[in-house]
Length: 315
Image 1 (cartoon, rainbow, N blue to C red):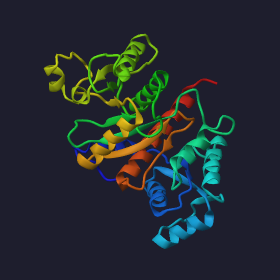
Image 2: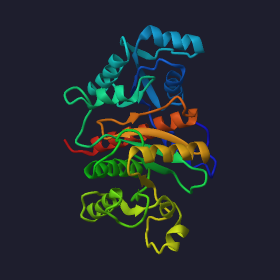
Image 3: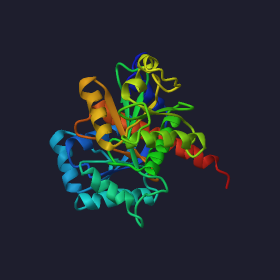
Image 4: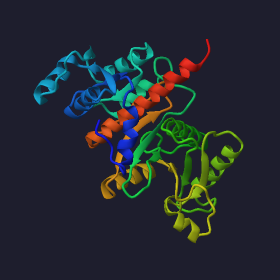
């Protein structure tokens, strides 16, 4: 992994993985160049030990076509994408893998296998997605949730989405993450339901129902990101101008925000799904190589934190 420059927030985040042993990772249906190359590159960098779950002949054909060296990488043959997802989930359930990585199948296919009540990887937490972003104009890594899994989350689902994001950011070294709960305005009004839910989430935090973070909202995007904008409107907040996490009102808002930052502001975005028994590395063909590796690196840090927690629990 390249040595990070002093102002490269994203590379500094990835550099935390240096020296850590690679994590066995079940890769579901890596049947195109992007997904297969991403898994093999993460292995070459020492982040993961990939277990490729999918049509073996097709995986080998993709590798041969693009000059990718499979070496002794384990392949578990599965006839199609649905079976690949089930195979990858089973590898985690049986303890062969500690991470799950999306290949070239649809996200819904993989998450359907994850969410099955009898054979999946569900926990008491709601599944949610986090974009870990390096925005050049922002002074630290910025985490946006949920922009890929929960379409119109309820209040209780938003509480789980916040908990998942807080747990992630704390593993990455922020002791008490600051959470800005976004809406269109900074005042509470029954005309915009997301403002009421934002206020409720803040009260849930004050009552100890959401732990580990500092929440404030509703905040409009400008007030959340800019201390000057918040001061102009008379908003007194420890979060405004310095959030680690942006909680969006729904998937549409989050997806558009993340993509605007990526394509208009030159940001890079690593994606990960939380709330299952293991982190799920969610990548896209449009992702840069560094963003795909970043997704792996964040998942690896979570896996090592989970190992440490399990080791610390007395028998």
